[in-house]
Length: 600
Image (cartoon, rainbow, N blue to C red; front, side):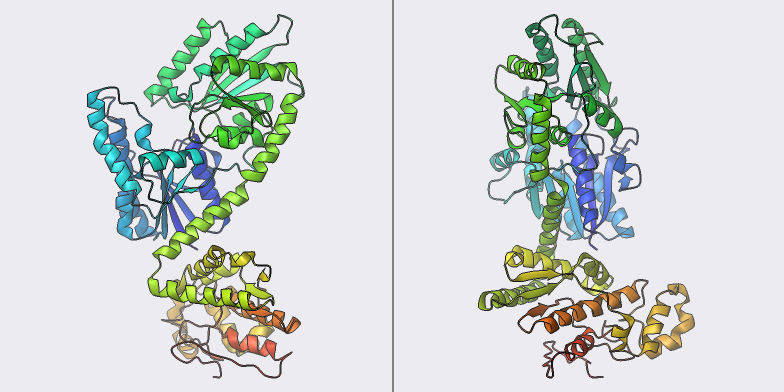
């Protein structure tokens, strides 16, 4: 399977970090070998998957300072990330050679990663140059080379993904309008957030989930809540506001902004009976607060995407947000929540009052929100699209001769579909891909073929059918090979490589060695290879009008009692034996530049 290294600056509990975790889970879902590298990972302040062993997380270069005397945060972040990339390329890759690199937030690492000549996928949450203010000439001069470097390094990626159409438009305006950029919406895995009932809550609860940063405009939640109280009469049932968010005491802005919010709450006469602040939280705590909430307040303006509205709707909670940025693509106004225009404080408060006046509104909008998220932002479509991007950039990096050959066979498929209205049976499965990856010489080739099939949309043709292969039985393998040979393949696969020398005479006899080495999964590999071609033959036997294709067969060098030319078993002979059950004559054509050993 392709080995993928993910690089992320700070693996905390923000939206970008949630996306990185989901990307890693999606890639593992498709069988990829995934490692995450980061400059910082605090197990007290992170997502469960990164600390419970579900994902491999490696921390490196955390020794480099985050700032210099409280300044140069961007420069230090760039240097830290470059150092992380150097570590991955020159240390991490020595232990495990990666096939794809995926990075996000900071593109400065890409020139280092390119030295591996492996494909690089960059996920742009938002151009970094737009995340800072330039209030002085000194700040403008300081940022200018950093901004130029960001544009240059971003354009070096083999593929660029963004989180929304809004970010895509910003990218084209400030980075490049000539580079194709694809949208991959973040997702909400089903196991992350579930639905809860809040019917037993004594108060109407509003919830804000955001990091304690000024750009999140959490003061809007406080002002709106205070204004809401002026709209209610004294007999109304109690209301409560929960403000929970990521908090890192190392970050001065987090500390300062939290204190500002507490001070503002006091000025607005919002004591602890009305407002609760929670600094950092676990997944279980977040589920608890979502269970209490009747509505989620999402206050950032021009947010690049925003994962919180998706989490809220997945938990059947409506969302009130500004009519800007990402929420315009995730929230359906008046159906799954409310999108508010200026004046924001008054508009937010009036929308909040709707949930007090109409007791059923939260449930109605919540159910519609869950349906909307499941249709557009669920995990499996996200994982499928991401996997397609990985396969496509692997294809582009493959050598031109192999690509030409793969295109030729896909063209052959296309012609068959256009010229014939007969069904085409195409043999493939994830298990077959994994088995083929045991042969170093052809690693990834099976994925490339499937990716091309999908790229040319042949799989959408009415007469094109994907069929999963069945494992070959022992008797089916024995139809082409001596049982002594098959027994030895099973035996030698269980022997420690350090002890193989003890069986050198037998290995030489069966030609197991240099070009056909033993490996632990050899028995299952033989059964998948043989089973794929036999499955194709069985479908042909069922109907004389079908065409069956197994691009992963053709191991024509294996002899009855010998391995040869990277071939351990001869699936062609097995398929011919199966076809002879239904057909008297069979034509075998070998297109290889050198002859096979089918008849030997």
